[in-house]
Length: 207
Image (cartoon, rainbow, N blue to C red; front, side, top):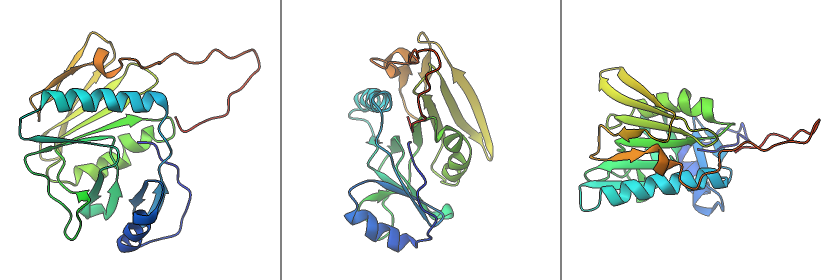
């Protein structure tokens, strides 16, 4: 997820949804604030495509649905809306009451980390997602290094953590019948850091 906080005005969920219908960009809604989503950089987009493509192919003709980027998620306990990079629903998806464009029951959520929002995805946003009763598995993928964090729910308020950092490793999901290699996640992804001339500084970006 890539986001830029640009406003402190408080909106109701209804106001947010009305604005989102006419907005030319995607915006998340967190505790009354509307947060514009920045455009994804090439690494981010490639990783999302790699993961979603692998999952969609592996789960074809099975009772799972794979959603990407533009699919909005409602988190009722937090009264928040987000757009996860990849979501998988087990069985039929459940829509928010009164809506045809917002789901509520992901089993697996995957976020591709950016420099500006990585800590948010790992902490506060993970807390939001854990309030969803169907949510069982979380994958955080670094777009600048070979690094994937994998969380699996093992009990009430209990999560198991596994880290992966080499292309030879494979991730075996617990909630879906699928594995994915880091080599496939990072296929065609350029993780090399730019070489800067001496004394030259590149201003920070959202990537």
